[in-house]
Every structure is written in structure tokens, then in C-alpha cells.
Length: 407
Ligand SMILES: Cc1cc2nc3c(=O)[nH]c(=O)nc-3n(C[C@H](O)[C@H](O)[C@H](O)COP(=O)(O)OP(=O)(O)OC[C@H]3O[C@@H](n4cnc5c(N)ncnc54)[C@H](O)[C@@H]3O)c2cc1C
Image 1 (cartoon, rainbow, N blue to C red):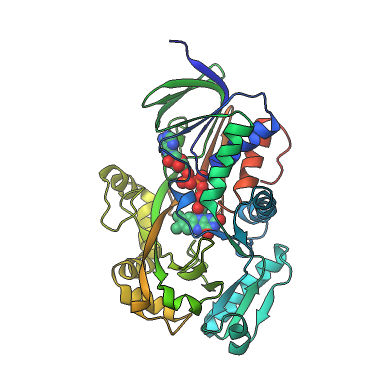
Image 2 (cartoon, rainbow, N blue to C red):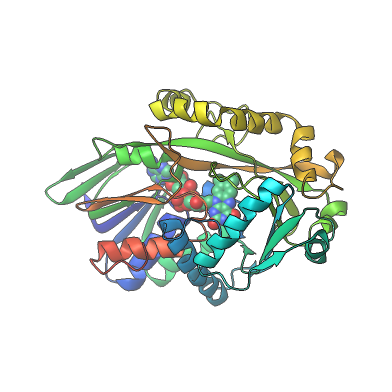
């Protein structure tokens, strides 16, 4: 049987991979592109199990890839949502400080927002000003970020696939897992558990398995994915009125997660979470989920033990909040004191693919590795759903040899 040959093969039908194939075919309709996904549908992992927030770019270090791509991705995302009727709403969010120490950190976040070019940020200088926006929220200072919004990311993923296949004639296979990649004489051979394909170029956007896929071609991959589950509760119907839009705490600047918050969802309801609990299975959505290979890979990574030494206490707190609804409620009560344990019903969960280096540094920024004719997206944590169109556009510019648009 002859080997099917493509110009480009893309691994992973999350928002990043979908954005890559969409931009590839849009810019170069004659190119032969194949998307390979191991699941039976798009967005089964991070892209379909997240908070559904359009991030504004306020948190990220000025000049970082996250800051640049969040802001560029934000505009592209809104234009795409308008053009293709993806439900979204720019409802704004508040970040609230509840202690004097948090006020100092809040000021730093505000400054970052200004440096990143955000306009119309409003300082909330008293409880009254906070409660003008969120009547049930408490705090001593806050920032209102009007640009933040909510969106239906799974619908966006389905739309990207639809455009790629039906408007631009792109090919996709689902239910095929890439198990090996071999590059020779400028041709990349991609072996799945069912077939073998060949291409001139390969882009991997494998999310929770990005390190394993990168290891198929890179002798020395200095990053390992450590999976952190984010678990949600939902506010019961009767208590949804406690939250009008989005309410966030001041995040711990040394920890790459935002802290449990309240999010009004575009499909209805209010979610509370997510926490950040070490997962013993990369696609493990429940506390008891365990996978020996995944766990061995985490425990054998030298950087992991440095994370334990550095964040052990925070990690134990997150673990405790995962097991104790009372502790989870306590964290939420800091923002909305009226919330009671009985108001929270179990919600879903997502697992974050967080890259970690050998020295225990949790990689905060996006990381894209390019070598000859292969590109690996090795770290695309939040806000990569918001930034997905900018990231995809950048990768395609790299592939086509055009000047990089953003990254
Ligand atoms: C709990 C949580 C909340 C978040 N909240 C937000 C938010 O509100 N806003 C925001 O902007 N971002 C948010 N994020 C981050 C955002 O969801 C991710 O950054 C983004 O979805 C990453 O997309 P991706 O395509 O890289 O990965 P994924 O969506 O995980 O897609 C990777 C795909 O690769 C496939 N794959 C892996 N290995 C193989 C293989 N060997 N062969 C074939 N296919 C393979 C997987 O099955 C998967 O479909 C959140 C993330 C989580 C987990």
C-alpha cells in the first residue's frame, strides 16, 4: 500500500492544533494538510474542560509570549466569534483583595495591565465600589477589568474543524493515536496505532502529551508535563444571583494558577473553582484516577521533587480543598461570604498541562520548539484558549517562512 504524503501533518484537535490547520488552509488552500487526533472528537481535553474565560492579558509579564499573544489573540477571537456566531459576552471581571498584603499585589497586577496596554481598568477603592459591581462580594480594594469575557470554547473548536474540513477541504482523522515519529531526508513519517503517514512538515499540539510527542523527535527534551487537575463546583440555581459576572481573588504570584474564583458561564450557571491538584493520571478527571506510567514519569522527573520542596504547603492545601468541601467553601467565602457549603453542587474538572523543567521551574510562558521541519508546542497553558488564533497564526507564518506575526 502506498504511503499517503501531505505537506503538513498536525497532531492534536484542541484549540491550538485546530487553529494551526485552519490558518494553514486559509492562507494556502492548495496545501495538503492532515489533522490527527486520538479521541473521537475535538476539544475532549483542555480546550473543552476549561473555565470558558476570554482573558484580557492583565496578569502576564510585559513582553512575554503570553502577554503579546493574549492581547493579539483576544482581538482575533472576538472577530472570529462575531463572524461565526460563537456565543460570547464581554461581561468584565473584578479582582478583589481581601487583605492589606493582597492590596500590594493587586497594585502590581494593575501596573502590569497598564503596561500591557489595557484601557479603562478601574480601581475599586472601597467595599462600596466593589459592591456597586458585585453586590454580594467582599474586599478592601479591587480592579474592574471590562475587557474580560466568557465564550463557548467547545463551539469555537467545532467551528474551526467545520471551516477547515468543509470550507477549505482539509483532511482529519479521529481515533488515531500517534505512537512514533521518524524524520529522514526532509520527510517526516508519522506512525499512528492504525496507519503510517508522511509529510514535509509536522506540528505537534498534543497538550497533556506534548512532552511525550516531542520526545519522539528530540533527543534531549528538557521539559516534562506535570498534570494539575482543576476541579469545579457549581452554584445551585437558587444562589446564582450571588454572582453577576466574574469574581477573582488576587493570585499568588509565585504559583502559575489564578486561585479559586466565580465564573458565570456562557451556557448558563455559575462555576466556582478551579483548584490545582496534582493529578496521578494525565487525563484523570477524578480524584481517584491513577495511571502507573503517568505517575512514574512525574515522580522520576528531578524537577518534580523541587516543586514539592517549593510548593509543598500550597499543594497540600489544594489537595485538602479537593477532599474537603468545607475547605473549598471557606476559600470561596473570602470573596462571597454568603456562600454556604450546601449552595455548592459538584461540577466538572479539567486537567492542565503544565510544563516543568529539570530545576523545578513551572514554565509560565508559552514554549514552542522549532527544529528543521518540525514544530512542537511544548507549553500552552492558560490563556492559550484565548490566544489560540494568535498562536496558530504564528506557527503557520513560521511554516510558510513569513515573518512571525506575534510570538
Ligand atoms: C481547568 C482549566 C481551566 C482553564 N481556563 C481557561 C480559560 O478560562 N481561558 C483560557 O484562555 N484558557 C484556559 N485554560 C487553558 C486552555 O484550556 C489551554 O491552554 C488550551 O485549551 C490548550 O489547547 P491545546 O490545543 O494546546 O491542548 P488540548 O486542548 O489539551 O488538545 C490537545 C489534543 O492533543 C491530542 N493528543 C495528545 N496526544 C496525542 C497523540 N499521541 N496522538 C493524537 N492526538 C493526541 C489530545 O487528545 C487533545 O485533543 C484552562 C485550562 C484548564 C485545564
